[in-house]
Length: 333
Image (cartoon, rainbow, N blue to C red):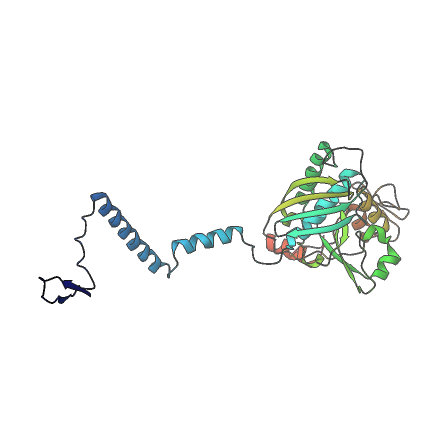
């Protein structure tokens, strides 16, 4: 509200009057929208209408929520522990292949510093002396190629994987601990140590041994990654990944007898195991068993044949598989 004073002629009093103004001025007429603006508004309206319908069908989940969820699922962690049964076994296949390829430059025992598990990816960190080779890769190109071939061979071999549990006292009495343990040996409070044992290939401790797959064929495809040597730390680092197979519903084979010292020594140096008591496997001063001859003085020592030839005892699980496949109970002959 504003007050104005009106000037009059001389001798007359000033006339005061009040001008009341409305607090809100009438709005100016809206400017007509251009055709392209109308089209844009209509497009936005239709888009919102379609989105509302889609949200109603999906239980209120917006398109942005779906994108965020898809991104999270793609980059998120899969369910379950990092140490998968396939990776526990794959570590031993890769390590055994490495020991064989290097001909003892890397040993099975007293070499592994760390096993790194990350779902379908793994890494081995091994302590080893510097070789004559220069550059980033401690292994030559030919050795890396052989390493890939050995890994592929062992997975295709479908060899049984055993779990052996020994006390530190048993390890000390029966074997050389430097060939059985990794760089760090178990402390004095350890009651028992579990070992992953692949006959003629690898034997090393792992608290997760009992979780690994039962056969090397159940691991899947192992793809070798980087092979790098750290000169300052004298460490060889090997990374790899696994395309896991679906494990078969087959029980783990039962170990008939623990491995002999001579086999552990051969595994430690990456060599083929040769029986101590004969020039040929299956032969000693009491029996001769080969593809052409079966001769024995005191009966056949089947445990010796299993050790010498790297075979397995026929167990109930195998008999059940044969009966399921043939529909007839297996005959003892």
